Length: 614
Image (cartoon, rainbow, N blue to C red):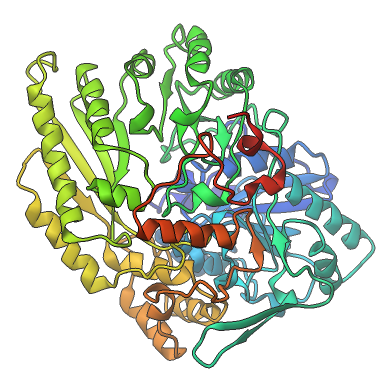
């Protein structure tokens, strides 16, 4: 299809900018002069994928190598997919518009379990067999990384190899090995056996899984020299770790349409429900000078007038106020706004508020997660009611009238009183606003309460806990709804059906591969989107394969049970997770990593907060 025909086709879709390419800072190379072509696939829409920091980092890093051309690929929305199938257009990369079927690597980043059908759909659109066993050639090699790889088993039949942990080093090591094997004409199986010896690489076909009659895993047995345990990779020195000085600047508005500067990786807090807080350990910070220099370069090379300081808990950055002082020297004269997501209520100050208020106000968002102190202790949130009210007071006296609060529903040991505590907390925050003498004059306050359903995730202390079932989720949502008596407190929550499916795939084993393929063949895709999600088709797919999804989502697991991810090593030990689970049921808190080491296991990496002087 020539350029004019392609442009005409784009006129008939909702957002042509998703597929046009040619954005500022996108990389185009002569394909005859590169040795390796890498299709970086994000299994969701352009607007979501272009907001993802990991893709920005690896896209730039790969393309700095003369022998590699990395191009971007996103899941086409329903309207464009229909046209692609009608016109016989295979899935293509944005930079060259070449079919990804002819690339060396097709790499997916797995951020969310409900994107798995999109991965299959993208392989199908590329004209490739879905299963790894049906793709015998060395190329294209289908690989995947990202947080969902801490339990990759539901995709084991489809992906050739998984990257565990952070990809800046291990990805290039695998690419170099591939180039060596490609040039000597070696086969795929020989390559995979060699790749499995690289730390951080998991090749699922090299592991046999045996099950008990009741469905639990009996054993995981490596073969052909594969390691019994696969440990994740981390970047040990964040100051010397690669970070791009420019991002691709989209033509259309994306979800996070701003420059993003990373402060640190990991989290010191240990909230017992939070997967990211455990799988990214240990905390490793960048210096304030490095952050300031990289952030300035990003703004200069992209033209963005807002920069977000990114981490799992931004106010835990040890040099935050000195950093902001440095950044204000150049952001203020250029009217560049500083955005600080992931603030905590227990270390939020008037001084910090003053600095983030310096250019323009953005909304303030906090996450108490639970409505009562008892349940906050169960989840190890380490936030008190006094701190919540002190933070809201600081915000209101600083001119804010709106606060957004995040909570979870269905946490272990939760009662109706805990749920009513959520709406009670919202009402008392409104009362606090009206009690202040120096509140904003003539303005009405609002508290937005967003409630998500708890999903037990691997490598958390709650990985052993059952997820509450759909009917109970809906009952508890009604408890919230009818306990809210304040019109200035607005409550929203997610679809319980989506949470149920996420729960099944989060802790599932490779028998779910058959369910996933069946659901895809029934037309399931974009399952995280309400307008596309079809629960009935999923239930049919489970039923046809004789699998009860509640076996994975709603079953309490014994501590000695072999989990589908137990042969993967993300640094935190199972013994530590068991200890934390027991403390949760006693409502006992664990201090954060900078107060006292909890011996989680992450010290094995030899870097970061584990070796700071406390």
